[in-house]
Image (cartoon, rainbow, N blue to C red):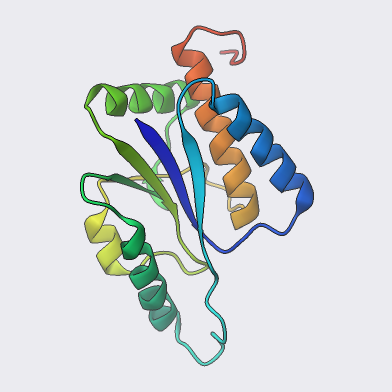
Length: 157
């Protein structure tokens, strides 16, 4: 199984980029994980929030492949603890899913057609984080999940 994090907009903070790359490198020991970036929309001041979500949805849908299991990182999703998240990944791996696609939407969330395509919604926290921070927190949690599943001394309960 491969895990892909699909995000809208690039990360400009070099520290976050470096830490994210470090966890991606650590994860390469367990399974392939990558980040795909959809460029931020330009000239959005004249667009309503719904129009912006619709334009982003078109771009997001282009990245979803047949057979992908789509999980939205969404503030209204289930909020698993780290061990539950590890179990969720284990369940997806055992199900034969080829690619587990996690999606972070734009600043206003997702258009209805993205919610309709999603297989599940997951929240990383009740707190709100910048899109740049979400990338780092997500790859760290995937790394944590893999160490939990392999009984390695990283996570402490």
